[in-house]
Image 1 (tube, rainbow, N blue to C red):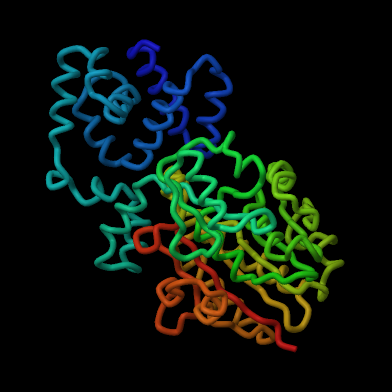
Image 2 (cartoon, one colour):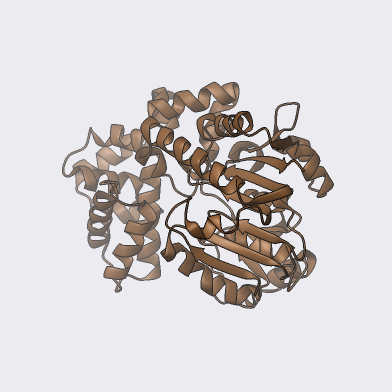
Amino acid sequence: MHPKALLDESAALIEQVFKFEHPADAVVARHFRENRSLGPRERSTLSDSVYAILRQRLKLEWLARSGSGSKWRRLAILAFPGDRAFVKSTLNDAEKTWLDHCDAVSDADLMSQHRHNLPDWLATALGAQVGNDFDALVASLNQAAPLDLRVNLLKSKRDAALASIRQAGLDAEATPYSPLGIRLAGKPSLAKLPAFVNGEIEVQDEGSQLLALLLDAKRGEMVVDFCAGAGGKTLAIGAAMRNSGRLYAFDTSGHRLDALKPRLARSGLSNVHPVAIAHERDDRIKRLAGKIDRVLVDAPCSGLGTLRRHPDLKWRQTPQTVAAHAELQKAILTSAARLLKPGGRLVYATCSLLPDENEAVAGAFSGAHSEFEPLSVRELLEALHVGQAHALCAGNSGQHLRLWPHLHSTDGFFAAVWRKKP
């Protein structure tokens, strides 16, 4: 594609994404479906441009003000990836001079908001938590996430899977915390990788793997993944159960559960039962009350721990949406807790960085449910032989899992665990 046409295409896509009516990845995917003539290089350029602007929005919008022409064209020029000579080949002399001036601006010339590229409310909330680590956290959130895989123990072991992946020519290493994790360098396509096609590995962030490990599901048990989504943790739990017992995958979205089906087929699992529910009080849930051994509630949340993958979320979430999430999380957690039999384990988790969705929800549940005893996440991880368990937990007590991108190279995750008293 000619550079001018590619730049125009990029500007048009950026304008669509910045309506924030739908998640950025969905908008980009729809654009590619509607423009199938775009080749792999064009798609990569367009996607990289969109995500660069979402990550550095405040900085690039500030720089764009000094240019001329359409706002979306100016942003597309600033975010265009790769060799500047390529994009300059379609610019006039004034635009080239403007771009050179913009490229010469250093971080020292920027105001704080143009360095952290967060809405003020979120910058304040994160700064209050991490203090002097704020710049390191922001830097990590503005980087693309690595590609993590989980080994399916029904079909392989980690050492064997690593050898297979390396034999295919990919650069891979074991993850430092999850005993089932593998981290790849770059973002290689897995579609034709034998280990992926055969179901020996599955894409899953290392932090997400630790949530499934915390549930510690056993052979022959009755288990519920209460907010299963596309089933990443469901698959991990089913493998931990050695394909025995009964694992219910609940979700209010039948579309997300449909995405689980091909993954299930690859995994070799037959103990998983996807169930679309209307809401957390659905009658199909009530029928299982008091019968379940373990329940994972990976609750709907702001998703702000996943900004490395979904940088649009920082512009789509607000304090009001966070508060609404917290109310829903409390309702879901209370409903899910009714499923457990005496002695059963309850795990509450989010991929949020905010205490309002994490410690506050867990504390409210503990205060209202004396029949549930909080468990130490650190002790549970140590019993599971997870390396450096103390470094993964918040505070000296080790009561909660608290994962941070700048500290652990995972998405941001929180988890609390309870046991229902006999």
